[in-house]
Amino acid sequence: MTDDMKTKEELIAELQDLRARFDQLSTSEAELRAAREALRYSELRFRSVAQSAVDAIVSSNSKDEIIFWNKAAEHIFGYSEEEVLGKPVTMLIPPRLREAHSRGVLQYKKTGIPALIGKTVEVPALRKSGAEFPIELSLSTWTAKGETFFTGIIRDISARKEAEKELQRRTEEARQRTTELEALIQMVAHDLKSPIITIAGIVRLLKKNLCNLPADEKREQLFSQLEASSIAVETFLKDLLDGLAVEATVPEQLPVRIEELIEEVARQHGETLEKSHIVLDIEIADSLPTITGDSRRLGQVLDNLICNAIRYMGNNNEPRIRIRAVQGSDCVIVSVSDNGIGIAKEYHGKIFERFFRAPGSGASGGSGLGLSIVKRIVQNHGGTVWVESEEGQGSIFSFSLPVYTPAS
Image 1 (spheres, rainbow, N blue to C red):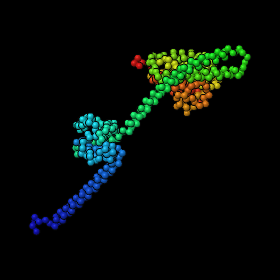
Image 2 (cartoon, rainbow, N blue to C red; image 1 turned 135 degrees about the vertical axis):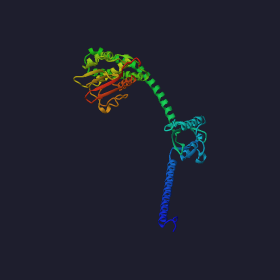
Image 3 (cartoon, rainbow, N blue to C red; image 1 turned 45 degrees about the vertical axis):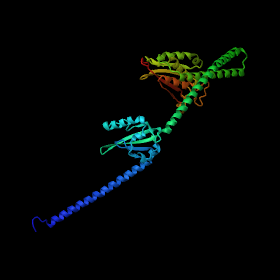
Image 4 (spheres, rainbow, N blue to C red; image 1 turned 120 degrees about the vertical axis):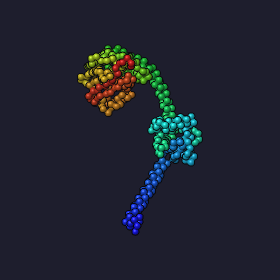
């Protein structure tokens, strides 16, 4: 045996090395087959999901050519898959928008800065028939082998837009009818107010003139009912007209000294409070800032809250009303509290609604409009109003008003 001839051991070693390499190649080939099968399964699963999607799914490559088109896209646009694959996306875009679309695609590929990607937008699209229709578009992008791809999820919103138009039309009709109805109510209420006031005056005059006659319990009861009914109707008409006026007008934005307004409104109720034996306490913090508002409308707020406190005092041996004004962070807070019958907590959320009166309140003469007027006036002034109350424990109605600034 010569030196250049391989030994038996060396040949065996080479054979084992070749066998190992063969095994590696076999393993790699099996792994490659498995990877291809997994990829094929993943692609089939994607296509199955995409094809069954309710929304249209359309993908395009860096040349802006369509490379994927699902069944929903066929239904929405009217094109079959064979008709669109390899065709430009612009065939789905109205002619007037195609140039802007192309510029946007080029801009994104140059800068990577998205304009519509990652957002959901409403844009017009084009059917095969040439008809335009509104769509909702969500656009995403990805990169593979240095090429940029785009996918759009598209929803036909034609039906929704038609429904919105119909809703807008009906809303406008309802607004018009509401305006006409409010005008009619205002006219009727205004025409009724004068004769009701006259009737109330005549009833009071007759009651006064007949007081020298012999006592007649039935007559007295009748006059009391007439007087109470006329006052109730007069109050209702006044509140109704006030409510309509508040809805239709914008309050003045002038400086108002709330302490002066409180004193003035309290004086107006002096006689009623005295007759009802109600003690009125007024607590006003020192150096209150001036507020912004319409003094006449804000006077209505205080007037309604004081009237409510008197009306719902109940059979209280020591009736008391307190008006308090303090400074908040950027506002003035005014509260009107009483020790009357109170309001059950389940009605706190409804108490400011029109015509709402808490069941079992037992009070007469209320229109159910006073607190809704209070809420509207306060909101029109940029403030808020709220209530704290427990049944049988009295109520506290509070409202905030912004501090006056020259800019406001």
